[in-house]
Image 1 (tube, helix red, strand yellow):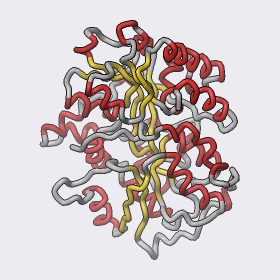
Image 2 (cartoon, rainbow, N blue to C red):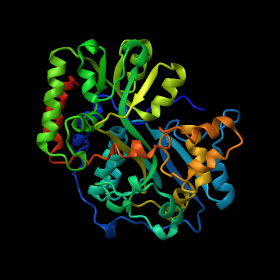
Image 3 (cartoon, one colour):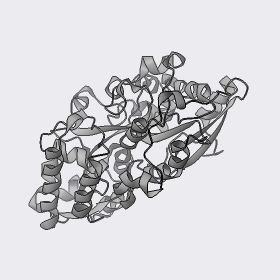
Image 4 (tube, rainbow, N blue to C red):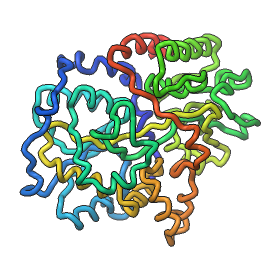
Length: 389
């Protein structure tokens, strides 16, 4: 097992100003039409690909440092994978790769994992290629239907989930002395100064709007402003201890915070370290998100990349990855594989609802639409003042 590290909480203050990433780099927001996105595919003569991912987001053998599923892929296909953990922040990576993609250059990678809210920007700019689903039968067969049709990429033509998760609430049940059932419970008097929210607007807003009855798949400006107005009131009365990145876990572990916005991917490790920590999908719902595999424009090994994506959608492979990273598995059929494992710890993960959500939990999960480019500056200006970042 690994030490869980949140994929979405590493943003910090720079995540608030992603809308300015293009102009900040001096690159015009130039849409690239479909016919200008591809490069001659060298997959048949060059059995290789380059894969950019986040740190600690793939299975690793602790004894050898090797990546077993990647090694098995190479053994089966003969395709050598150059695996780089060079994504530390969505906006930082966007700023690094945007000059190349905007100008139609070669990106130096064939595959990358991007958070859903940022993935929408790549799709809208035409900076990623449509995938050939005929080459990806396992994706077609096994992709979780609840992740199959995001607003930013209907039908998943240009993206395939790598892993998924829930934005909900984590709290110390023993320290609080009662249950938390709703996001509104964060505003109770006995939690004054002991609550944290995410600093990134894209990370925080969905759960807050759901708490006020909004449909986050098609939220309006009124919905967003109503949620931000409430947070401002909570800031003014000092209900909120602070706005955080992934350091919310240390606040919860130390007792500086009793309740916080949290990611399901962190919750398993938090509870393993302290059994008093609970993760809650609020009664009114929580945000379901994914981080997706995408093939950038001018990638030179597109078919090899599609073959790797499809490989990870085989239930046996998906199960190995899920057992290590412990996020929501986008391949529900992997649950049966883990349940049949001779390893008791792995078999127990088949019943972990934060890896394989129950039907009851699924009814409460909602996917937030991406914030449109024309909306983002106005929202960020308000949120930046509210969150003080």
